[in-house]
Image (cartoon, rainbow, N blue to C red; front, side):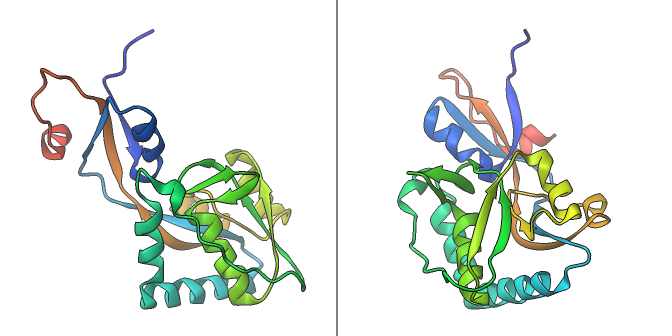
Length: 196
Protein backbone atom coordinates (compact mmCIF):
# COMPACT_ATOMS: atom_id res chain seq x y z
CA UNK A 1 0.00 0.00 0.00
CA UNK A 2 1.27 3.46 -0.89
CA UNK A 3 1.87 6.11 1.71
CA UNK A 4 -0.29 9.24 1.63
CA UNK A 5 1.59 12.45 2.38
CA UNK A 6 -1.38 14.81 2.35
CA UNK A 7 -5.14 14.79 1.88
CA UNK A 8 -7.61 17.39 0.68
CA UNK A 9 -10.52 17.58 3.14
CA UNK A 10 -13.38 19.89 4.07
CA UNK A 11 -12.43 22.18 6.94
CA UNK A 12 -15.49 21.06 8.89
CA UNK A 13 -14.61 17.39 8.66
CA UNK A 14 -10.96 17.71 9.64
CA UNK A 15 -11.64 18.82 13.25
CA UNK A 16 -12.16 15.30 14.63
CA UNK A 17 -8.96 13.91 13.03
CA UNK A 18 -7.00 16.94 14.29
CA UNK A 19 -8.23 16.32 17.82
CA UNK A 20 -7.55 12.59 17.70
CA UNK A 21 -4.18 12.91 15.94
CA UNK A 22 -2.11 15.86 17.22
CA UNK A 23 0.62 14.92 14.75
CA UNK A 24 -1.58 16.30 11.95
CA UNK A 25 -1.55 19.85 10.64
CA UNK A 26 -3.68 21.71 8.10
CA UNK A 27 -2.99 24.37 5.50
CA UNK A 28 -5.34 26.43 3.37
CA UNK A 29 -5.65 25.88 -0.37
CA UNK A 30 -6.89 28.02 -3.24
CA UNK A 31 -9.95 25.91 -4.04
CA UNK A 32 -13.07 28.06 -3.52
CA UNK A 33 -15.48 27.46 -0.67
CA UNK A 34 -18.42 25.15 -1.42
CA UNK A 35 -21.95 25.95 -0.23
CA UNK A 36 -23.42 23.27 2.06
CA UNK A 37 -27.18 23.02 1.63
CA UNK A 38 -30.33 21.42 2.97
CA UNK A 39 -32.20 19.35 0.38
CA UNK A 40 -35.94 19.27 -0.29
CA UNK A 41 -38.15 17.47 -2.81
CA UNK A 42 -38.66 19.49 -6.00
CA UNK A 43 -42.45 19.32 -5.49
CA UNK A 44 -42.44 20.50 -1.84
CA UNK A 45 -41.98 24.25 -1.87
CA UNK A 46 -43.55 25.03 1.50
CA UNK A 47 -40.84 23.63 3.79
CA UNK A 48 -38.01 24.84 1.50
CA UNK A 49 -39.43 28.39 1.41
CA UNK A 50 -39.75 28.43 5.21
CA UNK A 51 -36.20 27.12 5.63
CA UNK A 52 -34.82 29.75 3.21
CA UNK A 53 -36.59 32.50 5.22
CA UNK A 54 -35.37 30.97 8.50
CA UNK A 55 -31.74 30.92 7.29
CA UNK A 56 -32.02 34.53 6.04
CA UNK A 57 -33.22 35.62 9.48
CA UNK A 58 -30.43 33.70 11.24
CA UNK A 59 -27.87 35.29 8.92
CA UNK A 60 -29.28 38.79 9.46
CA UNK A 61 -29.30 38.41 13.25
CA UNK A 62 -25.79 36.90 13.35
CA UNK A 63 -27.10 33.77 15.09
CA UNK A 64 -25.91 31.43 12.32
CA UNK A 65 -22.39 32.89 12.51
CA UNK A 66 -22.44 32.44 16.31
CA UNK A 67 -23.47 28.79 15.94
CA UNK A 68 -20.77 28.15 13.34
CA UNK A 69 -18.12 29.78 15.53
CA UNK A 70 -19.26 27.77 18.54
CA UNK A 71 -19.31 24.39 16.78
CA UNK A 72 -16.44 24.62 14.29
CA UNK A 73 -13.52 24.20 16.65
CA UNK A 74 -11.48 21.28 17.95
CA UNK A 75 -13.13 21.33 21.41
CA UNK A 76 -16.67 21.33 19.99
CA UNK A 77 -18.12 18.84 22.49
CA UNK A 78 -19.00 21.62 24.95
CA UNK A 79 -20.91 23.55 22.27
CA UNK A 80 -24.29 21.85 22.80
CA UNK A 81 -27.22 24.19 23.39
CA UNK A 82 -30.60 22.80 24.41
CA UNK A 83 -33.31 23.89 21.96
CA UNK A 84 -36.93 23.38 22.93
CA UNK A 85 -38.72 21.66 20.06
CA UNK A 86 -42.51 21.38 19.75
CA UNK A 87 -43.90 17.97 20.72
CA UNK A 88 -47.30 18.27 19.05
CA UNK A 89 -48.30 18.93 15.49
CA UNK A 90 -47.33 17.30 12.21
CA UNK A 91 -43.66 16.29 12.46
CA UNK A 92 -41.26 16.77 9.60
CA UNK A 93 -38.63 14.14 8.82
CA UNK A 94 -34.96 14.97 8.32
CA UNK A 95 -32.41 12.51 6.96
CA UNK A 96 -28.99 12.88 8.54
CA UNK A 97 -25.71 11.02 8.51
CA UNK A 98 -24.64 11.41 12.17
CA UNK A 99 -21.01 10.38 11.67
CA UNK A 100 -19.38 13.75 10.94
CA UNK A 101 -18.49 15.59 14.14
CA UNK A 102 -18.81 18.49 14.82
CA UNK A 103 -21.32 18.95 12.03
CA UNK A 104 -23.59 16.03 12.82
CA UNK A 105 -22.95 13.14 15.26
CA UNK A 106 -24.40 11.10 18.10
CA UNK A 107 -23.68 11.98 21.74
CA UNK A 108 -25.20 10.05 24.62
CA UNK A 109 -27.85 8.59 22.29
CA UNK A 110 -28.94 11.97 20.92
CA UNK A 111 -28.19 13.92 17.76
CA UNK A 112 -25.58 16.60 18.35
CA UNK A 113 -23.64 19.10 16.29
CA UNK A 114 -24.23 22.23 14.28
CA UNK A 115 -26.77 20.64 11.90
CA UNK A 116 -29.02 19.03 14.56
CA UNK A 117 -29.03 22.33 16.48
CA UNK A 118 -29.94 24.17 13.28
CA UNK A 119 -32.77 21.71 12.56
CA UNK A 120 -34.12 21.94 16.12
CA UNK A 121 -34.17 25.73 15.84
CA UNK A 122 -35.99 25.38 12.52
CA UNK A 123 -38.53 23.03 14.15
CA UNK A 124 -39.16 25.66 16.83
CA UNK A 125 -39.41 28.33 14.11
CA UNK A 126 -42.11 26.43 12.17
CA UNK A 127 -43.77 25.09 15.34
CA UNK A 128 -43.46 21.42 14.38
CA UNK A 129 -41.80 18.38 15.92
CA UNK A 130 -38.84 16.89 14.08
CA UNK A 131 -37.94 13.26 13.44
CA UNK A 132 -34.29 12.59 12.64
CA UNK A 133 -33.75 9.69 10.23
CA UNK A 134 -30.17 8.32 10.36
CA UNK A 135 -28.98 7.02 6.97
CA UNK A 136 -25.87 6.43 4.92
CA UNK A 137 -25.03 9.32 2.61
CA UNK A 138 -26.03 7.35 -0.50
CA UNK A 139 -29.63 7.08 0.73
CA UNK A 140 -30.16 10.83 1.05
CA UNK A 141 -30.94 11.84 -2.56
CA UNK A 142 -33.22 8.83 -3.21
CA UNK A 143 -34.98 9.56 0.11
CA UNK A 144 -35.67 13.17 -0.89
CA UNK A 145 -36.72 12.30 -4.45
CA UNK A 146 -39.12 9.50 -3.40
CA UNK A 147 -40.59 11.43 -0.45
CA UNK A 148 -39.30 9.08 2.26
CA UNK A 149 -38.12 12.20 4.05
CA UNK A 150 -39.07 15.87 4.01
CA UNK A 151 -35.56 17.28 4.02
CA UNK A 152 -31.93 16.30 4.53
CA UNK A 153 -28.80 17.86 6.02
CA UNK A 154 -25.40 16.15 6.16
CA UNK A 155 -22.65 18.32 4.71
CA UNK A 156 -24.35 18.11 1.30
CA UNK A 157 -22.46 20.22 -1.22
CA UNK A 158 -24.66 22.37 -3.43
CA UNK A 159 -23.93 21.40 -7.04
CA UNK A 160 -25.66 22.04 -10.36
CA UNK A 161 -26.17 18.30 -10.83
CA UNK A 162 -27.90 17.90 -7.45
CA UNK A 163 -30.07 20.96 -8.12
CA UNK A 164 -31.59 19.10 -11.09
CA UNK A 165 -32.89 16.45 -8.64
CA UNK A 166 -33.73 18.38 -5.44
CA UNK A 167 -34.22 21.90 -4.11
CA UNK A 168 -31.17 23.13 -2.23
CA UNK A 169 -31.04 25.88 0.39
CA UNK A 170 -27.49 26.79 1.48
CA UNK A 171 -26.80 27.46 5.15
CA UNK A 172 -23.03 27.13 5.49
CA UNK A 173 -19.80 27.21 3.46
CA UNK A 174 -17.10 24.59 3.65
CA UNK A 175 -13.52 25.41 2.70
CA UNK A 176 -11.13 22.75 1.44
CA UNK A 177 -7.88 22.39 3.40
CA UNK A 178 -4.81 20.20 3.11
CA UNK A 179 -4.19 17.82 6.02
CA UNK A 180 -0.70 16.42 6.47
CA UNK A 181 1.53 14.86 9.09
CA UNK A 182 3.82 17.29 10.92
CA UNK A 183 7.54 16.58 10.71
CA UNK A 184 10.04 17.96 13.21
CA UNK A 185 12.55 18.65 10.47
CA UNK A 186 10.03 20.14 8.03
CA UNK A 187 9.85 23.84 7.38
CA UNK A 188 6.49 25.59 7.67
CA UNK A 189 4.33 24.94 4.65
CA UNK A 190 1.86 27.63 3.67
CA UNK A 191 -1.36 27.23 1.77
CA UNK A 192 0.12 29.19 -1.11
CA UNK A 193 3.08 26.81 -1.37
CA UNK A 194 0.80 23.76 -1.30
CA UNK A 195 -1.53 25.02 -3.97
CA UNK A 196 1.16 25.91 -6.49
